[in-house]
Length: 145
Image (tube, rainbow, N blue to C red; front, top):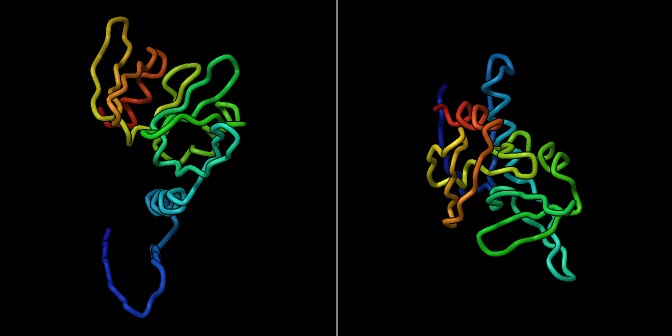
């Protein structure tokens, strides 16, 4: 793969073109990643609805049938269910960590094995989350460990 960065003062916005002999897996993954970076989710806090960058979300959790989006700055409630959020974030580095949680692997600072086959994740804000035994293999596979 050849990667090139060209500056052009005549441009008013960033332009990305992916050229390939055939739209294979790697090219499609790059295309999806570039497109998904612009994805926003809505979160409610108080009386206001906020547009949140998907990459800013540390993790998502469900408590008493209510879904919450956690960022470094605040907690927002989402009108969507966990599986709907996972579908929207499918191409990003969001993975199931348990029956009621999803983590953003880009926001994981460190990992440590825990008793019972679980995995302890320390997030970018210092918060600790546990990945249940059932989801540890997919997290490790995604991280390449």
